[in-house]
Amino acid sequence: MGVMSDYRDPGELLKVLKQELLNNSLQPISVDFYREALKAVARLGEDEKLLKEEVKKTLETIFLIRLKKEVDLLIKGVKLDEKSLPPEEYGVIEKIKETINGMEKVVFRGEDLEKSGRQVTSQAKGSSGEQRSKVEEFSFVYFRKSFSPTLDAPERGKSMKSALFKKGDFALIPKRLAREYKEQGTVEIIEELLEHAK
Image 1 (tube, helix red, strand yellow):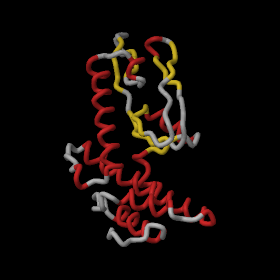
Image 2: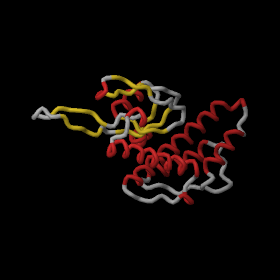
Image 3: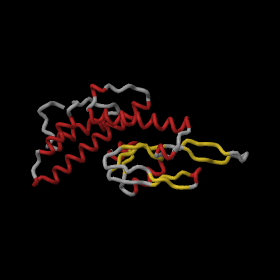
Image 4: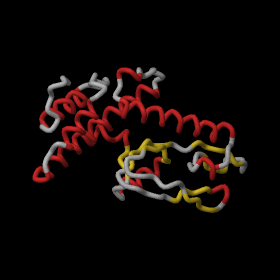
């Protein structure tokens, strides 16, 4: 997008959104894209509340779709260039890396579940009667509102209270919980976002 683009016009943001939806690959945008767009939103008057909400919703959708693509690249082992990404996106990617590293410590080093704040293993009995550990599938989610969920710790026979998630936070949580929280309107599941946007 050029520096003269008027991001107060939803049509300008819809052009960006359309490019992201029509292309599987991550599309180039200015590193100042979100900063300039938010400045434009702030310039909208009080009598333009509906327009402001429309612009903010479109901007949020662009952010989440691009983030989904960036996570896909991360999974494939592609190194993302910090200089080519808006800092708002790259900052989240760095947090994801930290979360994954922390999760790996829990899974492979057996760190305390209460310290991790995430359930990463479940116990199941095999045909021989011996117990075996199974890594639970996770979903990457975006919290639409503040929330303090209770996660199970089955091997301890009790529940535990996780840290409070704030509106706008991203987290890796068990898929079964992600579906439940989505039904409650608490989270957006990132991997489903492209399908919903279409």
